[in-house]
Length: 76
Image 1 (spheres, helix red, strand yellow):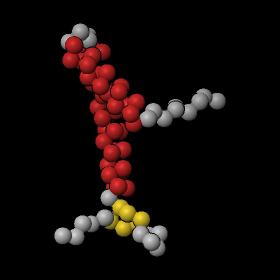
Image 2 (tube, helix red, strand yellow):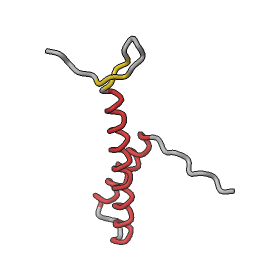
Image 3 (spheres, one colour):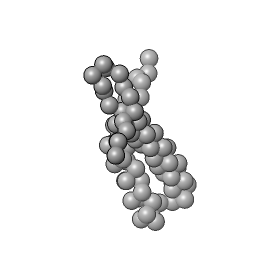
């Protein structure tokens, strides 16, 4: 049986994305490789964005004394 793909951490995805951007900015990447790297970068960017959205939703909730999660709102 083939091993399941190991999940890459958010931080590792950001590092990979930064590395790809640096490579593409160098202008030394052949066109076919650049297209492949760009596609990979867009996939990583979407995965990171999705993760940030999920975390943001969690941060915007607080645990109340009765153990219910409710949206966090600031009263002025």
